[in-house]
Image (cartoon, rainbow, N blue to C red; front, side):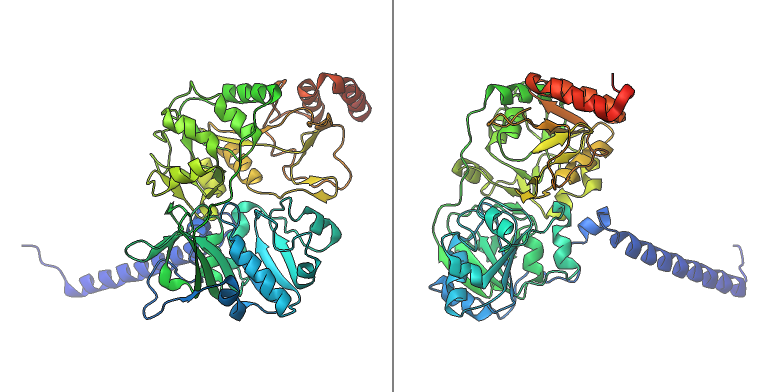
Length: 493
């Protein structure tokens, strides 16, 4: 046996404990620094900070079951108050109309609403001027039902990246008095889901003073981050009605060619991000001969269904959530809503995760497919405005273009027809006056039109101009060349 001096042993233990305490303090400080860094992976995953956990049972509590939306909402609406409204396909129209009616009856002023794109007539319908006296919308993404109100000053748009939306709640910049949610019916254990739109609705549910839910028999039960227990609601209105749907349009020959060019940039095993509309539908329609594709996106629509049904999209090569389609929200047809209903292979996540740049960059061959309204000869992209007119919003375009570019085998793609359906050029010498740049020239990588594709990364300004002129409509090239020569002088060839 080997003898040990007890005093030496005690000294050694004491020293070890002091070292461990220093390490613990260092790790705690490092964790705090990392989790507080905007856009960091830790920040994205730290989604409950300072919020109320809503997927637990609120013991001894049950919501008021109301017969009308006005009854459900009246206690929570006040002048200078703030209302969060669930958006997209989950727009709770009966609750929104109830809010309008209560606001007018109580003659409220400056009742602010905050939300992404809403379906239907919106919180201040154009044919209801009295509603505009009571309610002031603050959209983070502007749809057709609020464009005129923004232009006249009756609504105020918030420019913000999609990944940062939950930070408005978590940093206490926005503190809703009440959240209007649209949820699936409770299961046998009392758990509802946020259905088609988790995005930042989860953050709103965690940080609003009161929750009023439209419990709809036709809202699909969707797995992921949108779980919320029935006892967490303060008031509910039961409903049985269809969701908002989007019909797909027939693709034009130009859009089909765009899809073909995009397909050439997508390798087998890639992870895809796409939105809604003709360009993503065109791209998806040309991927039928690909294999083992995956989905990590902020939203998807019906265009993915044929590829999932044929096995082209199986999520087998993804770096995270292998075997599952990951998104923050969906919008499309009833067929799409039926597909996601209680489908374990589809998870809707908090947008702080889906749109986190580090998470995106970690995907296998991340391909981000987005579009813009117009692009100048240096690659600057205006995606949310037509001149000074607010048309939409930032969305997640920069999130995914940045993340895809940071992925070792990824590609960030901006794709659009070279002209609008009215014949207006979309590749232009200069953006329209007061147009807002969403994606800067330094962030633009691949550009695709019906005339081909080009990678602008690392190119000089004159080189970019030459590549973009080749992608422009043939009838626009002569004028673009003239402007390029005036701008770049002898450097333009």
